[in-house]
Image (tube, rainbow, N blue to C red; front, side):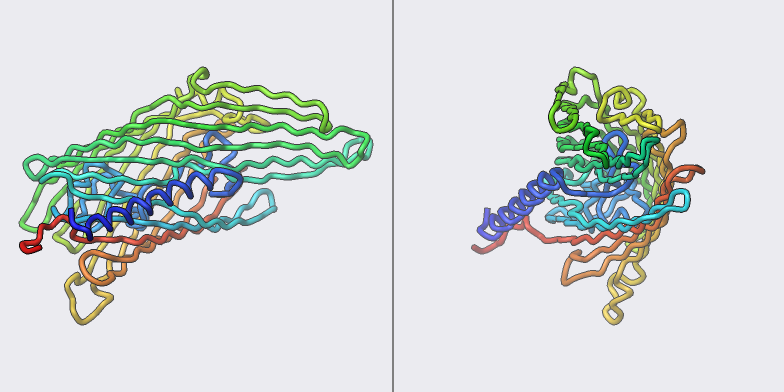
Length: 431
């Protein structure tokens, strides 16, 4: 291995370690996301994929692109130049506006989104490694009341934390058309939920209760892609993925405190409760015309009915609203076009432009109704220097809470990605 190649590997390893360390730090006392709906289950599930995927509505199951790392389908990693090394680093931000019965509020958050590297293994095989958020919990709900004895009470419910995923995937291509891939992951994180009752009269005892969840989980995903040429420049690709339902490990710690004096606690291991992550099946179809444009449609279906989250305190959080796990579904469509990739006169013709739309059904119900969301996305990649290096942007404008009576959440998401590409695995003729 050359000194230059070794130096690059060391830099990549250091950056990956920094990303994992930052992910661990963000699960402790920091809002990695904010939404009143994150009070349920393991919080809001994070939209997977890099800024490239998100600019097209989150599609990627049937996408094969040698210019970007596609972590939506492990089988796509073989779509690459045979000597290439690729990396993607992302940041995401979100501004949310809330409305409920004439009341409103807002919140903004900015976080590290993902880090992934990809490289070939041997001939028609390749792999990738990375870290990305899996879910986020962040909320603060507070209200006050005065009882019949004119004693004021303030009730506050807060939560923070989330789960992250470290993953590795690989694939091999047969007959230049069929690619088979797999991904293995380790999910980890901490979630804390606390409810307090503070009295205005000191003769009354204050009360606090809370749940702390330390979660660990291993996951696995199988995938394939089949590419069928329809002309000299055009091709149709079919993609399929399946992520297994796997058990959670870790523990659930519940505590109560009455007047700062009487305290109790209860610790349970999640493995004894039979709690599981939901599985997910995904299928997609795409049409690509040369290196100019591509369109794709994806469908995902995830069952959390047997996960057991609605039976374990800390996940269920039943109060005035009834929480139950359910079947989640997603519909996504996306499109991208590069007007003139090799244009030497006009820079904007070398840029890639994207658009997409999606509709998602949540993995749980509240009072019998899903908390659905829909949105539109816009994206763009600005080429930088040589090869396929670039800076990608993605905008996500959507709404969550479509059923009458639910809290309306209008959000504006922003994602910035750095796409890095280099030729690493070449052997010089002269040392």
